[in-house]
Image 1 (cartoon, helix red, strand yellow):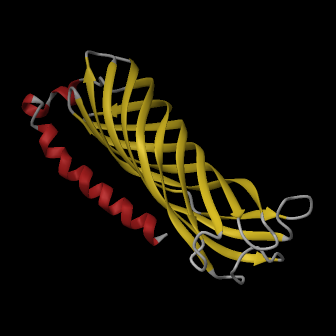
Image 2 (tube, rainbow, N blue to C red):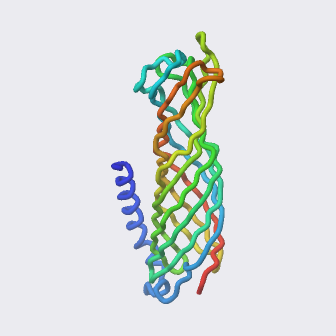
Image 3 (cartoon, helix red, strand yellow):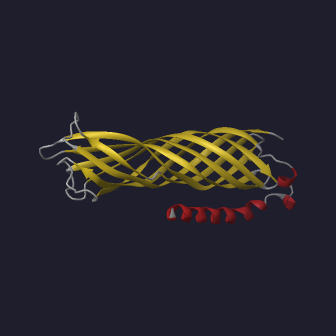
Length: 249
């Protein structure tokens, strides 16, 4: 919760700093107040790059594969890759303020791996994020052509984990997938090209939280059952966006 509140304060501060710059683009500050060019439904696509870090901790085990007891920290690794997807949203402009809701889905190639901290090169742990979903509220400040906003909401991700044991008597590999839940937030900037095409750039901070991943067990290549707590926090994402706005002027 502390991590979430800290990022809200930072993003609010950045959004406030952006406001005077774009207010100067509207002569007399009257254009945004006299009409509502940002009001409407929009649909579009985005592409970007994400970088984060995943932490593995051992929760419990009945297998001799891991070299750790329950509760021990196993490893952590960078989780980086590309993200591409689509978004759909609705804006309502009230004077210079713009309020909106935006769900989006992205395919992802975020991936990272490392060996255990105790015996490097023995057990290999990998994390792959294959899909991201979010549903966020947006609050922004608009001029005739520019919109700067803050986005905050729910996020989830399909996280696949894998353990490979290369030495010892119980060699093998096993994978598991779990849906992680967390939040998304960050500032963005959009420019209206003509009356319908919207170009934008956005920074997102995603925290997908922690969840238990069960690996091994009866009928698998890993003897026994291994339960790891996998924390996928602190993913920083930069996006470029293009949208088509069906405005309601």
